[in-house]
Length: 230
Image 1 (cartoon, rainbow, N blue to C red):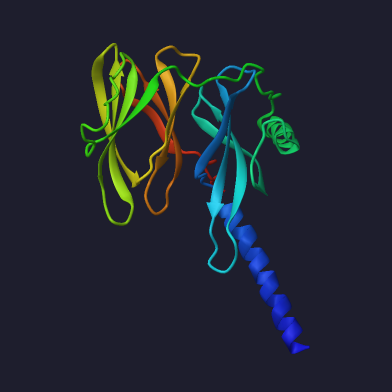
Image 2: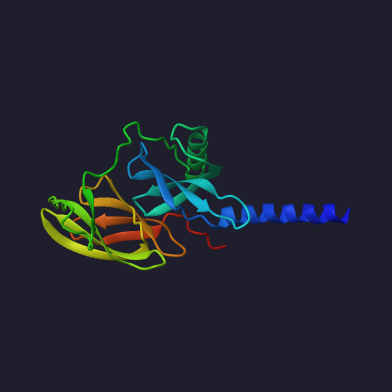
């Protein structure tokens, strides 16, 4: 009988720990879909957090956020364990309805949701040799160059912004060996949204708003809803 009580208590602790981790660790580690809302300056971000427990198989928690470009605010929607996500799934529909109530406005995924920017992201490696053909830089591009990488898999990369054939700004990032950069257009012709992997041990996907006139970061934050001060 005592053994059953101990086992039951252990299972309860594991369950509570799982819920605590899922609720607390809200950074997303990969982007799955980014869709504009029918309302201007709202963007639906779907990504997932990766969990690798020591004593059980790994799993993914899919998360939905809305980013408001007008005030640089994230609002968290639903989260659900899964093995993939489709924007036409019941989860997405449920989360959009939830966020509509939370934000006090009717949200709807835009029918024409192709918002990837035409600005090209070019990846370069300083160790590349002449066995490869180096891609030419177009007039408007973001050039990502891996500067170095250590034995632990951490690396340092530069992001150089080209406008009209001229390099206007260079930013340097530290993080994992594999850096992901995605650019999305906005309603402002001189502003784009950049989503990229940020950080090392406690890494996650961050969102930056970039001014294309000078390459400045107007906003740069992990994709997560800020905690409210009580």
